[in-house]
Image (cartoon, rainbow, N blue to C red; front, side, top):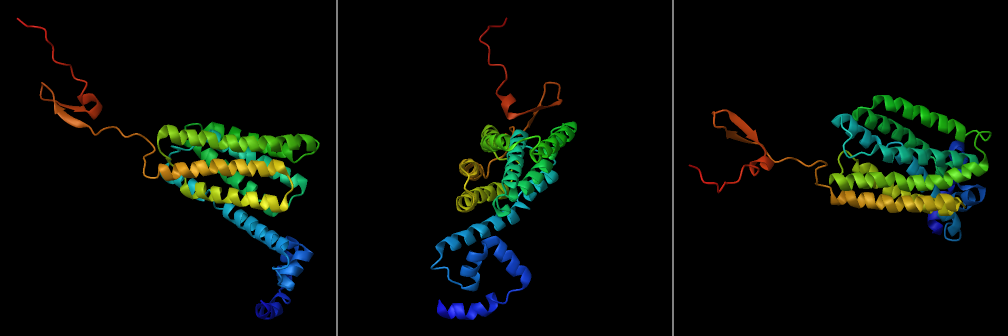
Length: 287
């Protein structure tokens, strides 16, 4: 360790000012000194945990900028919202926006909640596409206007005070739980994942687990922690469904049609379900 420290310290003591400023702001003066300048992680495990937490937080925020892009592309390419629940996205978006406003007003480190805003923005676009492909394009404008009004209110202490904001954050945890249930039920009913993106599902699973760790390390707020624990549990169910239905179709396919010639020589098309619906032989005597 001493040899490694001797080799690295000339570098860490002469970092460019921007890197020094970023590191000092992220870790704090004491942990920056212990980990970067002194390179002494063994005697300062609390700083190591903080460093890991900060690294995970930055990684989550970076990944969140593109986590829903595959879902967007699937919707745009297929021009279908099969298997994607609008209610699920509505609840999830509301939960993220509340969490973003609450954390910002509490002054929590941005690395512990920054993905909320990025994912919420992507969710808004996805929700609008789901409405559009569902033949409800007018509803998209109402949806966006409603969210904009809600965000404005949450960032105005004169409209929503701290006590009310705390109640909203408690409700956001329930919204986060509720947002997953419609999607889970949709997959179960349709017997497939449809246009749901596996990339998004598994990234959410990893991200929610990492958020449990970063919240324990940096944010002393049980409301936020319990929300992430519940979210991880439901994300695990979604991931399990994704694995289970991996090769399943999102919609039931009808049996192949067969051509049958009618009594007049004209072709009659019948599906497999119709073939067995013919009249059963009668026992009535003729004559």
